[in-house]
Amino acid sequence: MGQDAYIDYIQSFFRRWAPLYDLFAAPIAYVYSAAVRFASFPEGTRVLDICTGTGQIAKRLAQRGTSVVGVDISEAMLAHAVQRGSHGLFEVARMDVRQLAFPNRSFEYAIISLALHDMPRKVRLAVLAEAARVSRKVLVLDYELPLTNPWRAIAWHTIRLFESPYFRQFAREDPRELFREANFEVVRERKLFAHWFTVFELSPRF
Ligand SMILES: C[S@@+](CC[C@H](N)C(=O)[O-])C[C@H]1O[C@@H](n2cnc3c(N)ncnc32)[C@H](O)[C@@H]1O
Image (tube, rainbow, N blue to C red; front, side, top):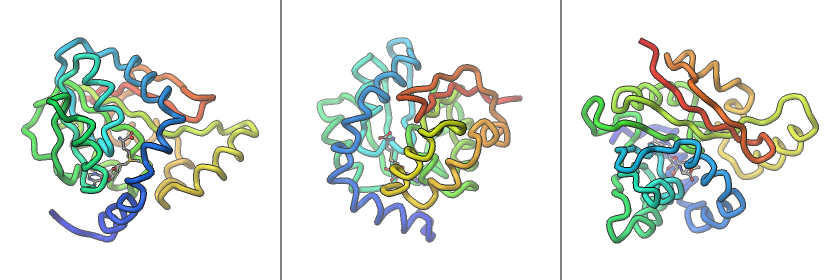
């Protein structure tokens, strides 16, 4: 597994956050559930949860009959996902998502929930490319702060207190620009939680 400064940072960042992550995720439980409803995958759909973390999305997808594999690099976060996915609810594997250990098109969907903002921009592009390689369509859930109202300042200052340094660049860019550069088109999108988050369905452009 190739080590670099970003991976070292992410590992130690999430080692610290893992014990508290689900506590902080509780107020946005609605966001996860709304994203899963937006996905509305038919029962049995094979989904790769890229950067599964503690398995918040993986669990909700699996409970709706989706066949889920969750992957992440943080052992500390995965320990929670393993517990959450126990009794065969979903599978978990440790890997760097820049190089997914799956053949081309092995999943119908890939989902990337609240993770692109924790990566340098070039890593975001690499991860989106891997998602396009292993699946047919991609769902992304992430912050998209309102640009034109006072909520932006409040949201920005609150969120940057606990997010990784990569968040700042992520929040300044229109995610549609990133998706275009990664060769995806946006099929559908929905804003969630007073417009703090958006969920996108993306389709690769050929
Ligand atoms: C904020 S958490 C999101 C977890 C989960 N998807 C959710 O919505 O709650 C971001 C996750 O991305 C993972 N991550 C970041 N870069 C990664 C990489 N290159 N390979 C694998 N996992 C990575 C981190 O370890 C962390 O668990």
